[in-house]
Length: 319
Image 1 (tube, helix red, strand yellow):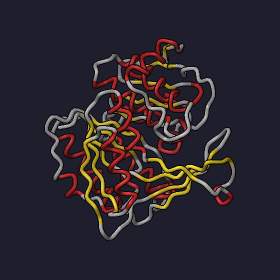
Image 2 (cartoon, one colour; image 1 turned 90 degrees about the vertical axis):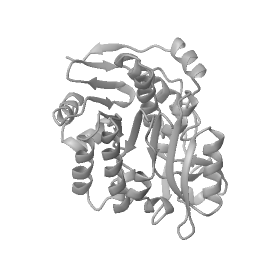
Image 3 (spheres, helix red, strand yellow; image 1 turned 60 degrees about the horizontal axis):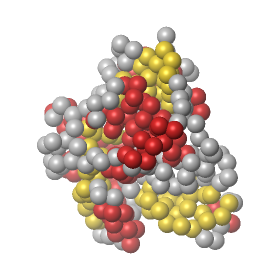
């Protein structure tokens, strides 16, 4: 059985070949997208065994996604849906800033994942479960499945990391989103919000306040991503800021947070101390920033080690 289990929606992605509004672009290059997919790919490239569970449409996009995951060496358990299509997205090409992303995922095959998919999953030998806030936002059945995943992890003493990855457009209201995600996060061990996400979820504007909000609710470790300012990490025993790793040029911001999660999870699994795990997260996030695409910058262990040897960052006490 795989070390890490992920549930989510993989999507075909079409990235514009030229800069400009999506409605003006004539040519696109197909790729693979999805937050959980990115984390799965990143962990596998670092040598960890990964199980990815989802539903795909019985269509060319679904077959393409399955082939991509197999080529990465990821163990997949995807049900093919003959009535609902695989989701896809369009993404603009930019020279700076965040790209425009347009989703076609309403009523997709993945939105029909259920608790039965969770209960039929073998967790023997699993060492880690990673969840994002996207999966429970897809549908009520996905929300129920996410809660069941957390229950199964608790039953099997499996630690859980949670990346909020807020998608307000997928929720009935911001109030519902905040309530449900905070309830889920309180049942997890590690939470990895961005600073803006943390403010939306907790009402706190500073990273220490965000961390203390979740630590008081039972979370063991909180790492707040601070963009170009690095990250802030706090547990009940320690807290520290870590500067970001130097980036020559930011090409595409999408996927950097997933790369950060890859570093944290892999570091924990490999027994790194907390400082080194966060440093690895910062490094993988930086590598992802320097390439176009959601997961193309996720490194092998050799590439990561080379990059970390040549990079410089700083750790400072949080108190």
